[in-house]
Image 1 (tube, helix red, strand yellow):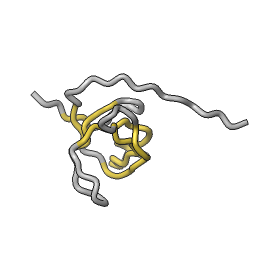
Image 2 (image 1 turned 60 degrees about the horizontal axis):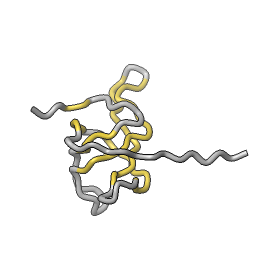
Image 3 (image 1 turned 30 degrees about the vertical axis):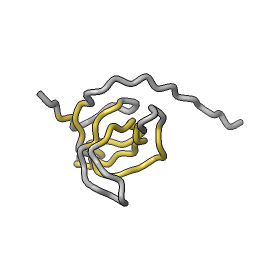
Length: 85
């Protein structure tokens, strides 16, 4: 059974089941980088994510409204942080 996710956790990988936007076809698995379901008690549901590419790397940041479900794939992703002094 597919589980819909209204409020994905930052840092999680979920399947975006949205729409076609800027020639980028959904559904696809994405890594959630920021966003929120509620903002000041109001529905927001606006998110930032990076698409999980076929080779397992992450694409560029994309953003939009969310429609998510659990991913049926397992990933091992390495996140590198560049600190600016």
